[in-house]
Length: 227
Image (tube, rainbow, N blue to C red; front, side, top):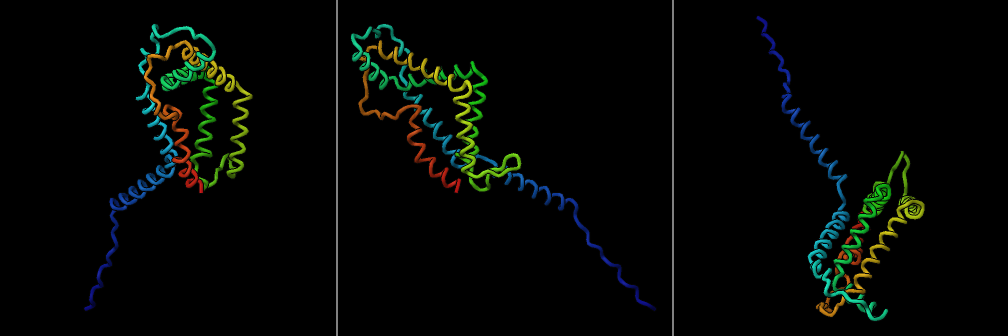
């Protein structure tokens, strides 16, 4: 009698395992893509620096009731007296005065939405296309590759056009002039004799102190990100 040949065994694949593997690979690729397009370390450091500076400046502000105390106002005797008052009051009310300037500037931009949109777009372009964008891979827009020098040139030209050929420049200048007029008028008529000035206070204290510290802090990170 002839011996029956064994039945061949076909390989069986588990569709559930295959589906799970594909889903896990897709999730990993998605996470890598999200991480790749996330903010750079230099940008995160710059944002954290600004946030800490603003919080520290607001914590050092003087009482607004002390700023508008009617009994402390008097006409200056001379121009030199007014100048001395401005210097002393600015040293004491620095954070409050910067807050007033910021409010006047914000109000001017809000009441001019076209200027606000142009200025926001310009700042975003500087941040994301040059300052905090790594040089590798190069910038590609509309199917054309731009070098760092070309990107910088386009941004400079765009800044000149936005500031000098649109209403943005006039809005910023007028807001700063109005804010400085309010601050100088208040400081000239506010008698500083009752103020306890701290001579050891750093002159960089306030909202603008991050400009002095951001350069050594975020500068190397931005340079390393672009290399």
